[in-house]
Image 1 (cartoon, rainbow, N blue to C red):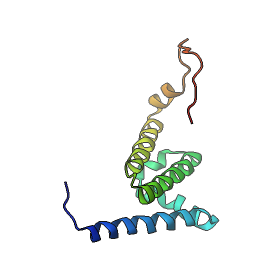
Image 2 (tube, helix red, strand yellow):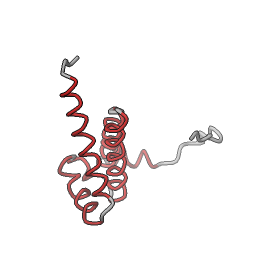
Image 3 (cartoon, helix red, strand yellow):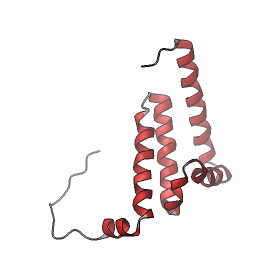
Length: 117
């Protein structure tokens, strides 16, 4: 538990909102998007184990999660995005795990899956 003033909490929330909006605006410009994609492995060293498409997907998901945290107070989304993509990088970094994750399942057809929206 953390005890803080309402003004301090509002300031932190405003900072997160501003940073989130700035990053989203950068992603809309080619040079800004390129800069963010290049900076990502510096912030998250394990991202070097993601391919280019995965890095782009991680960047978009992370920025959307930051926006949700800032605008909706849904901070868990940021943690979930980082943990999920770090797990993907961990599998990509281990050739045996990657091979195992890509092999077809042995006759375990569980039928059709219904997607919920």
